[in-house]
Image (cartoon, rainbow, N blue to C red):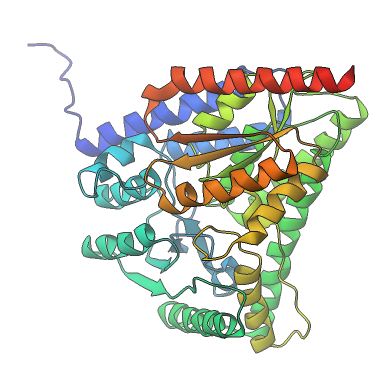
Length: 425
């Protein structure tokens, strides 16, 4: 018998090990596979390694408010001294656990999220979960999560946004959400604490907008995968730490632009990314795009641009007007395909192509993500009418598709380079 007794690996240890392997592979790819690394991105690389490889909690002693979608207002959570933690999950390890609990054809993001809850293996476990009734699969997932013993509260979300009735319906839902959270926290929502929270999140959004402005330039100072990492960090990071890291990053961006440091090649096609959200560590498609010598300069997804795009616009700084303004931001600005009519999304994609001087659009839809799968036809038709090349890709969380996806994306990138050369003749 060996003098060193081998420890028996528990299911939780195995899950953590596999997730750490997924996480570090993506972090190292972003750090090592591209030229001109950004020094201030090390904060974000270290953050993801700390949380997903070392399983270190960030919010000890704080009330963790889990959210199943970006439609739950962080402004109200922070105002009531809670910490919002978005629970959308990008791990194939958790997707495999969720596959035993949900239909095979279910969305991998939902399967991974349910799998995470089923394992009860959190670094920062949510004390309560708010689940907006957006897509059908997430709506039903809330019931499954509740059956695991978690406190889950549904937040009613309308499927249209144009009518005054929908607007009033959503305003009532947000007021009810604020009441529920206030009771749970045993803390009163006041004018002063909500105003402070709105302004702090507005400032964080302004930093994202400043960073996005640099991406409009011909010499691109930052990768798309780095941007996804930055925005995904907002899911769970301490907001003050995130703001401080962004301020440091913006200073480096200014220097890189002045020194004409380009993360892409001279002929690298510029891409707008849309569709099912890239959520760490499932950056499979964005990584292949940028490893194929293209550059993601903008996106229209709920894990990035859609979170930061529109700020709360307040006319009167009294409590009820602020709550109504928050409600309007989370409904009117939303371009999620769960809406019956969604022309705003098509307009936004075309605007992003024009404003960021993009050459094409890449549309990702997770297999089983029905709303994005169904809406792809209208988006493809609109891009064709606008003369914008678009590549539609159906993917999942499995690593097995890598070769086939690389071939399709590389061919698309080469066609864009040829198109650009022909334009320059």
